[in-house]
Length: 73
Image (cartoon, rainbow, N blue to C red; front, side):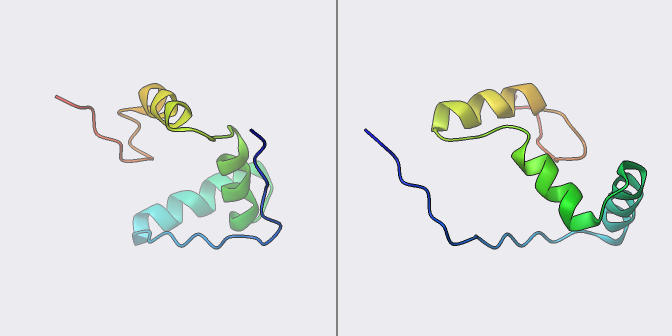
């Protein structure tokens, strides 16, 4: 089965607190890129196609305070 990629770009809206906005600004500045470019880079680091890909990504990143993924009890 072949998946067709949409050519239209999607819009992702994320609400950040003032503290999170500051952290994002600082990290993007250290990386030498604009905030939007830095976020795109983070999103594109790993391609998530299936639910299994997502679950494995969550397992690797659980407990990461930047992502606010709380460990399951």
